Image (cartoon, rainbow, N blue to C red; front, side, top):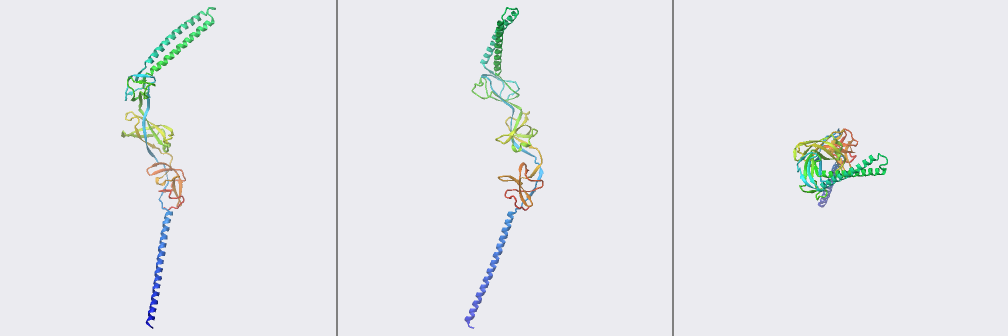
Length: 381
């Protein structure tokens, strides 16, 4: 065998060996690639399953009722307050009280002077005397004619009737003059300014000699009188809480000027209607201010207890979800999510009352509800 023949055989064997090795490497690479693809596919399937079947924590629905206290702002106002004006045009003659003066009902506060009223009074009195003189004369004439007419033929019936008519007309003039005197006397009484009730003078807007009355330049009252022995505590209660209040509810309140002191009051008056702008109901409480520590128009922080009522369902706040369309909880039935529409009631800490919906005690709810958990989706727990 020649050398060339031997070299050709060796070359052919080398080529064959390289081909076999290449096929083996290619096969191993293909196997490894398939394994990676299967592994990635399994991981994707596991992730998808986790998304489609979320794991949640459950809480039970419990029967109960929350007792709560709400704190709302209020204002103290006088139980009674009145602005006193001059009824007639006049001048201030005397001032008997000033700001801060405590007054009693009927007490004289100021004396006004109106010379024209005094003149009117004198004229009215003179007219009465004048008309009375005329009346007495006509009455005497009538009485004499009546006495004379008892003798037949002495006085005609016409003369008697005329005398009676004259007497009655003069009597009417006297009555009219007396009415005029009463009117002038009433105007004279308006020159005395008196306190309409027990209270405190909180403003005085006039000085001696000032011209007051409807024709005066100022529209300010002469005095402002406030009853501060008893005050009204006024609050506006939001609509959601109005159903829990009654006239027997007792409240506590504090004021900024006396932060360490706590005062009590009882609900006395409930408006029975909501304010259209505030969407709240006005409540008034009577506060007895014997110590005089409280001042009208102080702001107060009022603690209003909301009493227990009929039992309902209580759940954690996180179990109640709110979307753009509804408020709901997610009940779990056979590993399925069921949205149940509810209404929220009182809250206290991390708990909230819920009303309505197909719920009963011990039903299981998703502890952290949200609209991301779709209605009807499968859940793990």
